[in-house]
Image (tube, rainbow, N blue to C red; front, side, top):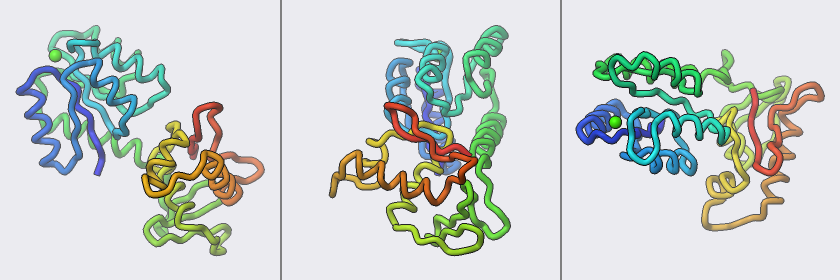
Length: 226
Ligand code: CA
């Protein structure tokens, strides 16, 4: 289920949003200060952020700006106050994806959330056989199957897991530490070199000579580009 971070300092608003979003089946995390919200965004993984503008600690605008400056493209919906026309323009200029004006209807907000989540989910499309196409590779993460030119390709469980993780975070930088934590967890800690070797194997299966899909972000990690 998509994870949503709500950054909002009005207690009743925060509680109401959290309850309703959880009822809709979303996983919800919250912050009631701008600076705390920014830290959560920096360290956590979210599919979408609801961001109030007037916040203690750091304004919603600054949270948005700093987050984009970090290279974090998590979709952001600004919660602006009524009549603050300028807020909306400025908000979109500094990288917010959408805004709703308080007081907003829950139904309207839910519709915006769905639209944005759908937009970010369809960037990689499943083909008619339900396979996801990543470069020359066609893959089913559910069945642990992969094909190139209709021929089955051998891939280890770890390779599937790594590719799935990259796919779920496509377009975003994934660090080696992210992969070590997610894929290997606490039980066995391989070196960063091990991660690089897995990435190399995946690249050989995915990339063609003309197209690179797993790109190295120098000094940071990797990014899947579709
Ligand atoms: Ca506020």
